[in-house]
Image 1 (tube, helix red, strand yellow):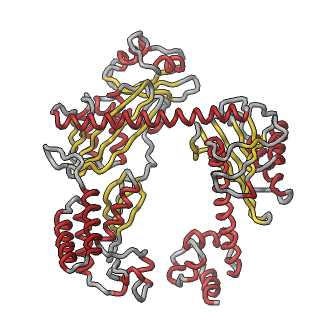
Image 2 (cartoon, rainbow, N blue to C red; image 1 turned 60 degrees about the horizontal axis):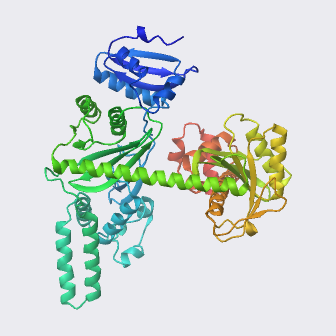
Length: 598
C-alpha cells in the first residue's frame, strides 16, 4: 500500500519503516508519531542517509503506547528483534576477560573469558578490556600469593606436592601443607588487592626489602623492588575524580557521516582501569537517539556503575535510569557534566573516540590499498572486496574434509566459514576440490565472491575453472597459490601464484605485504581444514573404541560420548553414575561395566 502519512496517529509511540519486501529498515520513537515521520519528507532533514532511506521505504507501521518510557522500551526491543539496517545495534555475544576466584574449598585465581553478566558463585573482577593487562595482574598476584594453580581434578588426585611447592610458588593445599586459615588469608589479601587496596602490600614489601638489604641479600632486595614498581604501575591512578571515589563509566562519541565510534572509559574506585570502543556504520539516528539506544542495549549486558557521564543531555534520561534500576535493582545516575573537572573526563572520552575512529579509518584505508594492489598485480576483473579460500585435508584418503573461509575488506569474516565432509571415495585431492566447489557454488546465485583462492597448483585452478564453466559463473576471479614443499609457515617462502590468463606461475617478492595477505588467507583455510579433520578423526577413533561394548546401539554410544566426553572418563564411571542416564537399561549398564572391567 502507498505511504499515507496524513493518516498516521498523533500519539506517542514507535514507527517502523519497511521496504517493499517487508524488511525492516529503521525503527524510531516519537511523542507525536505523525509529526515525527513528516519531518523525514521535508527539506530540513539533511542527515546523510535519509535520502537513501526514503528511496527504500514502501510501508510505515506504527505502534501507539501510553508514554515515552514505554516507547523507549518498545523501540529497544524491536531493534533487537528486527536488527534494522539503519539503526544502532550492539551484539549480545561479546565476551570479556575477567579475573575469577573460583568457588571452591581451596579457591584458585584464573583468567576467564565469559559473558560480562554472570550469575555463578565465582567472584569476578573486571572485565578487563585488555587481555595482556589482565594477564600481568594475574602473574603479579601469583608472585605475591602462592596459591594453587592446578585444576580442581589435579588438586583432588594429587598425593604429593608439585614442583611449584619446591619453588615456593604454592603452599600445597592439595596435601594439607597449609591450614584453611592460612590459605583463606591469602585469598582475602588477593580480594583487597583487586579492589584497589595496595597500600599495606607495598608497606610490607618495603619492610622485606629493607630486611633483605640489611642481610646483604641485594639480589632479593632488587627483586622485591621490581615487584613494588610492578604493583605501583598497575594500581597507579591515571585520573582520580575529585568529587568521589565511586565506580564510573564515561562515554564519548565521534562521528563522520554515517559512521561513528562510542568510547567508554571505565573508572573503578576513581581509577581509570580500561576502555572499550564500539564501532557502527550506516547509522541514521541523531547523537541523542544513538546514546539512548546504546545505553539500553549496553546495560542489558553490562552491570552498571553508580554513575554514568554522557557527552550530551538526554530528554529520556530519567526513563533510562528507571529502566536500568528495574533490570539490576541498583541506582545509577546519568549526568552530562558542566563542572570543569568532570567535563575533562568527557573531553578525554571524546578524544579517545576520535583517535580510535581515525585509527580504524587509517587501517581500513591501508587494507583498501592492499586490495587494490592485489587487483592490479593479479589483473583481477573486480575489486576483491569479498574473498573465499578453499583447502582440503585427509590422511591416506581417510576422513577427508574441506573448508572454506571468507574475507571481507581484507578481514576474516567468520560468518562465511563452511565445512565439508568429502563424499567422493576416490580421485584424490583434485576430485575432492571438484566436489566441494560444485556443491558450494551450485547452491548460491547471489552473493558470489569477487575472488576465489585455492590452496594448490595449476591442476586445482583448472578444476575450478571447469566447475565455473559448467555452472555458467563468469563473474568470479580465480587463482591458486602453491606452497613451497607443502610448508605453511609465512614469510620469505617461495610461492607460486597460478592465474587463468598466465601460462607460467607468477612469483611475488617474498617480502611483499601482498604475498603476506595471500598467505594469511591460504593459511587460515588450511588451519580450519586441519582442525575439522582432527575432530572428525578423533570422533571416529573414539566411536570405534566403543564398538567393543557388546549390545549397545549407535545412538546410545553417541549418548555416552556426549555425557562422558571421552572414553577415559567413561572407564572411570560407576554403576551409580551410569544409572543416572535414563536411556540405559540394566542390560546396557552391565555391558558397559563389562567393557570397563575387562
